[in-house]
Image 1 (cartoon, helix red, strand yellow):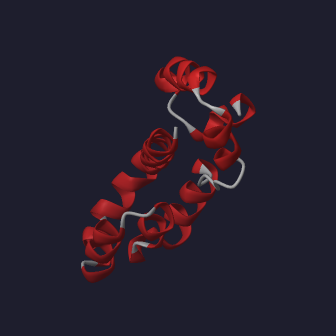
Image 2 (tube, helix red, strand yellow):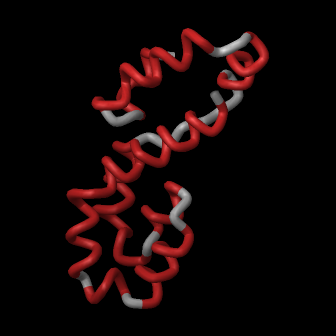
Image 3 (cartoon, one colour):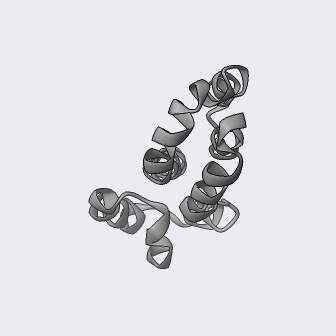
Length: 102
């Protein structure tokens, strides 16, 4: 699991390690089926088609995706800001998803 540390915030890695060590076998087996979103893919989507909110839809932020779609990326400003924020948002979403499982 720790080979996937690019998918999570670096500050949360010790917490993840601790929780994984305390996890029972049933929950550990569940982790093999979970697909985490790649922060690099979310950045590429943000750079190419982020003005339409596709990057936010990709990470599961449907409400923000609709907001970006309706406003054309916040008239371009929101789309540019997301170029710098989307990777961390993806890692946070992955962390939240992982914590809900273990």
